[in-house]
Amino acid sequence: MVTFVDQVTLHLRAGNGGDGCVSVHREKFKPLAGPDGADGGNGGTISLIADPNTTTLLEYHFHPHRSGGDGGDGAGDFRNGATGADVKLPVPIGTVVKNANGEFIADLLEPGMELVVAEGGMGGKGNAALSSSKRKAPGFALLGVPGWQGDVILELKTVADVALVGYPSAGKSSLIASMSAARPKIADYPFTTLHPNLGVVQAEQTRYVIADVPGLIEGASEGKGLGLQFLRHVERCSALLHVIDCATLEPQRDPITDLDKILHELKEYQVPEGELPLTERPQLIALNKADVPDARELAEFVKPELEARGYRVFIVSAASHEGLRELNFALAQLVEQERKTKAAIAPVRPRITLMQSRRDESKFTVTKENSHEGEFFRILGVKPERWVAQTQFGNDEAVGYLGDRLFKIGIEEALFKAGAVAGSTVVIGPGQGVLFDWEPSIASAGELIGGRRGEDIRIDQNPRRTTNDRREAYKERMDRKAEIRAEMEKERKAGIWSKPSDFKPENPVVASPYEDRSEASEQED
Image 1 (cartoon, one colour):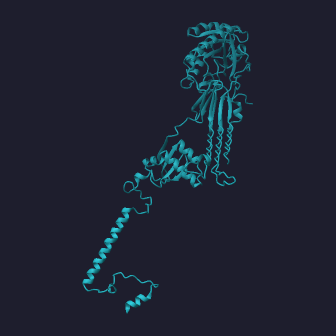
Image 2: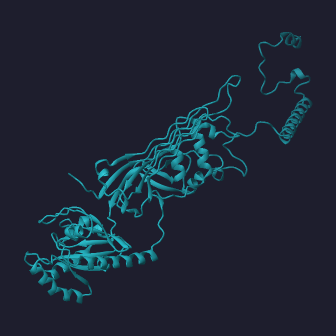
Image 3: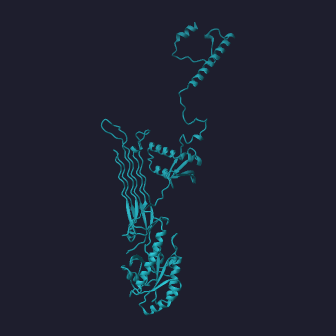
């Protein structure tokens, strides 16, 4: 059965925002008293909190799916929707948070440090909030925004001051059991320790934590044994204590060779950027199992050579507790120095952070892309994407409101500059997004419309004539009458006709069957 887990993948879904409400207040003698649709509630967020009482990620290994509460929908009579329940997940101190691609997000090093990993969706506004002096009673509301959804990787790196490293069965678990109250599993076969063990050690006024890491073998940095899986727990440690087995009976092994191989594996291990390499950290050597006569003789033989390399060497025995007091004070002194050094240069860590980086909501991009169906224009930005998600596309008034919002932030002007024309395909959002055929509004298309300055051929002109129009029409009518009189006088003088009844115009007017026949008969007589 799994008892220790130091790496899990969480599948998170923050709460969705509630929809706004469309409602009109009604009461006696006031059938239409104005809009009273309330806003929807915000969705619940999911956050991680560094908890000193949590020591493993085992809970998330069995239950990796976590969801925040959805926000309630708004209602009439100005009743806002309920806010979705937030979810707070306790994690061990020293948990590293990464995104689904393995990129570093945050490091929860301090107790109580909180990281919001999934932000809840925003609730939609009701028609009461959307009303204005120009829009007295909106017949639409905004939908709630979906919450963040995705995967997060949690990686536990033990927070300890000193790490015990060495070959399997070197006596590391026995040593931590002798120096602290920890009770790790101890047996006479390799790889007894399958997960890190922590122990708290007191040396006068100094208290520090030591970590027992599973044994390392040659090739651990390449994935052999359990070393590569647990070497990340050593990254947090300020100092390293090499526990060397001086009583081993394995061939081709001796304290000097074991130390060189362990140092090689530590050197090959790649620590995160900005961290001090493992081999450059303070190191002590403990020649263990001195209670065995042959082991003591070997330890005394190699001690001068190790000290010549610049190491402080202690001959100890976890069984008889020989040399543990001196080793304890030496480690405490080393830890105290490292703490003072880090305190002087360590930056102030933020207590609360957000995983989703805050993008500038006023910015957006318009790019021209090509697909198998032809070219289209893609719009990416915080506001356009959120507004599209809030729009009820089955409501014409809501679609018009979306067009007004996009126009105000300069979307249409940016589309013109990118080369879009009326009827161009536009996609808002990543991936499939929301696709529509673009029809420019009047103001943004003004500079591209033909015609004289100040005129718009798409707008019907005012049918009411001005004074100048009436004066011009009167002059044209008078000139036409004068031409007709002159023509009639010319024909009369030429003898073509002598009385009005003899004048026959080129285009005679057909008499209506309803005209009075008496006048026609008098003219014939």
